Length: 116
Image (cartoon, rainbow, N blue to C red; front, side, top):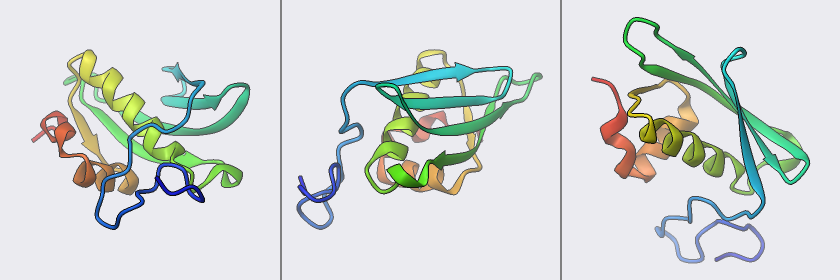
């Protein structure tokens, strides 16, 4: 691991670990269509979504990390946590968010969740 940038690979081309922080918690706010990420008691950011009531397919719309916490692996952790929760529920996704699209390219093990 790169000590200056936790979660960044030490070797070019190596995939970074999906979650490099401890004490993370995710809160799901279905009324507002978002998942919020917290590191202990500090708000980190959100992943916004919408759900198609007819199909149950979730469109992942945007990932926003507070500027003070950017480039430290928090977006990657949030997307991992959301995708793991959606997978456990058997939910299909549409990755509208460019960060989620890039994530799926780096971690193809989630590609089977993408709705055709």
